[in-house]
Image (cartoon, rainbow, N blue to C red):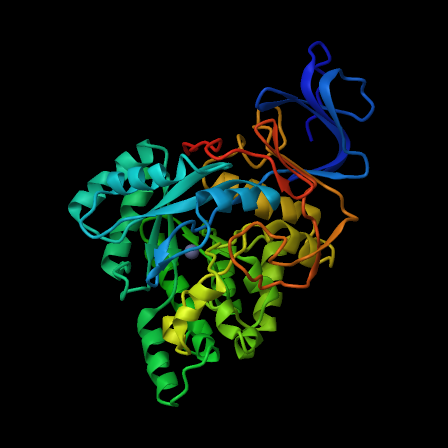
Length: 464
Ligand SMILES: [Zn+2]
């Protein structure tokens, strides 16, 4: 905790007497803001002058949440994910997310820099919170390799590789994967992977089809746990040969978690994330009449996997919780027409990330408040080169802050959420932790569930 005394100048905003939660712990105090930055952290009742005071007594004050895995307006499965950068970032703000990282996915033959420029042009006029992009490589060549350093110089210091999705033309084979890891290591960039083994999925899909059934529960059955853990093991092994900083996107299984734990215990700095759906939902949802609405890749698993992932968060084996937000409407999901192979995969999530972790993690005692802040704020900022501008309550950090009334409960209903999905996987669940106020660089962009920000006010963040 850093408490300073800077009474000699007047604050624009003072958030007074809240319980401040950051990675160092919890302490009572006030936060002074001038312009877009935090300029002072004071003990309670310090008598600091400010043009505007926000009373946070009895409330929790956290750094704005960083969701490092979202897909706004993503063309996929013959449709486009329902939230664009405007609705997606407004929903994010309501849920306490002030920074998000989306993806710029290379098309065959396309230059990485062009891919990024196109994606920025889609985001910039619409985005209402700060954002960055991961650069997803799908067409490996000498030209692509040469471009990687330019991508990093342009402020995008993370790449994504798909170990699956051969059919979509996104897959990177093991040879290319190894070379990307080598180049990433030279550039000190993060190489993130979607880790699933496509051949195992193919074999299990064939087996599932031979039963004559096509229902949503086969979505889960066609992607067994080891189709993930095998790919996780392979990715880390290949990365370790060139000392690359590898990051596992959306990890879902006990087995993968154990592999990451093993590598980390040997001192290899692999980082991994999971998502709320893998912590609170199980494959039973696929047996429901509307089971296809819950389809994600990888799929949700078992209670044992959920419990292991919660433990992984608390132990620091899993460092980040993101959402993989990729929302669809019921009508879009209906494109599956009863065949699990055709479901547009993805769930709405950016708005409910913090409340789900708050309610199901912190309030149940599965995780501590420190773990909550680490996994949602400081770790994502550190791993992806945004710290301490983002993810921290420190002097000089951006004044991205959220204020939570811990006693306030909200019943989840798609009708009251701001995401474009007309259903919620958590419909009817009572959640705490929706922020009363979300502040982006000193400006209140959400109050009591009402979005007050502005399209285009979000900034593209250059990352180290
Ligand atoms: Zn994703």
